Length: 373
Ligand code: PA5
Image (cartoon, rainbow, N blue to C red; front, side, top):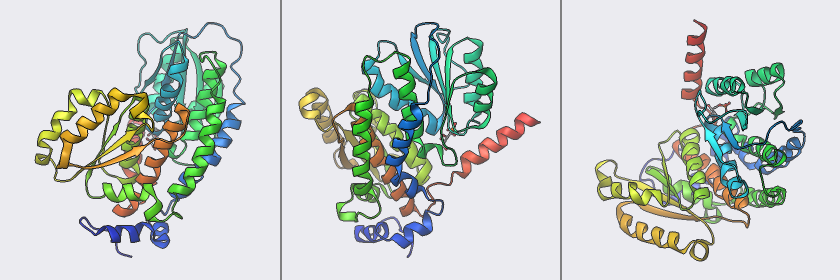
């Protein structure tokens, strides 16, 4: 099987994506297996989440700050998107060594690092301790777990040994449980979680390698993105979070550039870039991540999207994706899950192992050496 080339006919891309032998050869480290078994991970995570004990409540929580990076931070964005409509305190995500000045004793700081060894998260953990914030750690181990145990900070320990970005279920559901048990949500979201897991189970089959190209939206999207610069737009706040996840999954799995934006903000700046976009690159593909009921529930947004699509016109290929499910959580996960699969299929088209992240590993190793010297 030869690796796909730019300009290759769609039939050849279809053949490549439906070829199981080629997939196994490229996906040496088994990312597809992890993505496909995501519903099982979510079910296990819901069980693990029950083990969280918030302990005695000293002060009321007035803000929630999730601190983490990369594949660990995105779970915080997803949490913010689904929990904010049910919380009367702000929920924010922090991706830095330090914390904003407001973080103090009435802030619930959730330090999340899948490996437990990310230096920015460890530094933010120290800042949260100094500020006497209420704290919880979510990790599979590493230095973060060691510190939490030494400092008697509650920690939810999740199974380790896989890439952080393939562990969103392990990170998201314990965080959700932390919020519920800290009394910041106006209702339990466990029913939404159940709907989400059931929907993921259905989609695992629909987007999985066994489903052929002609019926498989994830494979078709990968073929549309191949050889172009992907720009992913979410047409509502939660879909903007999914767009960011698509971008980072394309970056890490397919080792390709991608850009993400959210409506309506992109209508106030980025829309102008489409006027002269061909000066920068010849092929662009815009993916619109939209709510299934956008026309009835958010008609002004639907108008914006229609006008924007006309303005972009033929300067970019355009792909539209609709959310599935009833609850906000299910709708968000449905968009995220499609992007997870599509980015893995795109990796196959580029002939790269989706799991391997040499650049990140090298950067972390060099920084660790710097610390020791
Ligand atoms: O997906 C990845 O591997 C990265 O984005 C990591 O999540 C990031 O480097 C932070 O590592 P960790 O999630 O272990 O804190």
